[in-house]
Length: 191
Length: 268
Image (tube, rainbow over all chains, first blue to last red; front, side, top):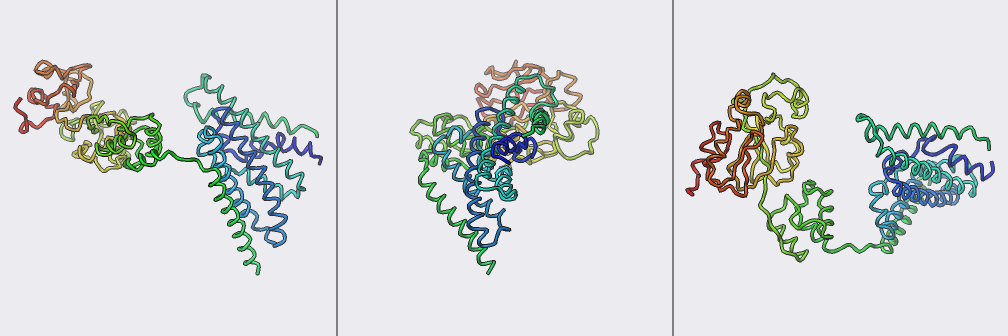
């Protein structure tokens, strides 16, 4: 598999949200405004790339030599949690506005299954270092794409005349379902 | 041996992460306004949300940034306001202390019932069944939702209606929000003369459902020497700024809907 097709596959065909259903919590929680959605997407890109890099190195240079690969999950969670904490401090200092807008969802990146999903998949699929880095960039780019598109839809829905019983979360979930169907169209791509 | 290496490696990763985070927290330290911390300490710390901000931390931030007045906390007292005003370096404007009050006197024996209610003992559930089992549309149902939400143990149900303890009430407003019938309002703490009825019907319609309801007869309005009580929409409302608590209305009210202890009446 060449790197380009890996990128396309990871970002749109197997979109982390619309076809793998990982990371739904921030996808629904922070998608009310395009600005904050984009901020969340960028934060997730940052966290996933950095944690993929570190977990890959940890896997190769620490877990494998000591033959304790079965502790992958717990070790990776530890690293991700520390990274998210780091991102939180960094954002608090450099961009208080974004820090406020992301609110509770920023620390929740720790439990965002997309992050753990990507780093575990990298190991599971036996990706090389380059391949896992491409995967680590492509997957959260897919997340960014999905959450920004969805935020755009929700901003429009806000001003639309929605039936009383569907207002709020129900219509958001309906919209998410429809977008998931739309993304199914990418599975026909032959690359 | 395995277990030692496993514990060692994971512990090592943990220690490295911890040290790096500690360094990062030094590097990215954001100076916090000392006033925020001081104001936070001067607040009661009930985190009730009565001020409209998310918890005491939220209010401390708002006060320090000048967004909220120093007396924005409904739970705190004069002393607390003074402390906060001192921290902020402004004069405290201390308003009248308000308390929540249940505007209903229709206890078991005085108010009639529409039907016998056997459902869940919950005001909201009861209110969903044809507006509750009291015949009066604006009567206290007495299942005690307000008692449950009150964090200060200030409310109890006496003979089928909620009664709020003036001294314990902090005016956080939770019960006002919770009550499905909207019979809880704020009144000044020193006010004894209160129209304990919210029924907007007139005359006979009120008398049929409750013996102590305001029938909108305007006797109180005509007799008040201070122009402090007015009947609008068939309900008497007291202007607490003008009321001197002379209790003439209490005495004259034909249905005894206005509270006030006539034995403690002041001579003026």
